[in-house]
Length: 136
Length: 137
Image 1 (tube, rainbow over the protein chains, first blue to last red):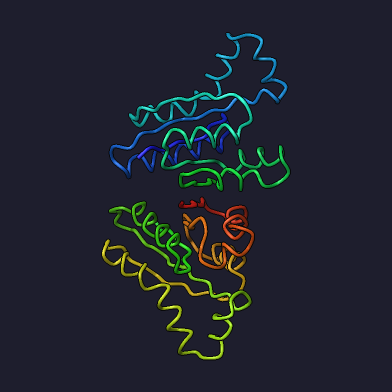
Image 2: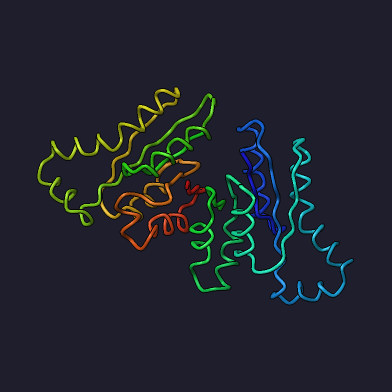
């Protein structure tokens, strides 16, 4: 059993992380993976590309609070940082890495939705091979 | 912890129910709510059933029973909720009046989800429900 959470540093994604921790406690022997996608189409993130150092710091900042939550519970999580279009990257990653369960937060979804008018959340759910949980 | 699962008699929905039961695990206060919506507008059989109360209850029983049996085997308390009307709207309304903490859906069902532009029921439920929603593949 492999559980993945898409993390973007928001409060909602922290609640998604909480939910993943709850799942981890339910399924013994499960593995947890935190996924963060950097979207270079967003301006501030594009600027970061120019300096590997600041990019590194930026990623750490986004993942920090989620990682802390996980560590406090004594769970070891794998961290994956992807670059590109968020929903495409998530779909590709989940499908190629045999992830059984993906957890998304609804704010993240709405954000994605803004990109391609509407059906992106549906797209992730439709194209991903794993079960998906949406946290409100 | 109370988890609701929406079922329609399909294989997908059955898997969703199984998943809900794993989530409930061995919790003391585990409760599974089995929701089945009969859509009179959608399918001819269901419309015909409206005319005969007995066949209607048989029909609903056939959909709900496998899941209830599964839950009993797992030792989880179940409640059955039968709704009629538009599936997504009925499920959303029901969630608002109930203390469900989590909703589990199959990714596509036999009729309601497949016919309505591939899973648009799960989509609108997902967007409008006020609790976490899991789509089981």
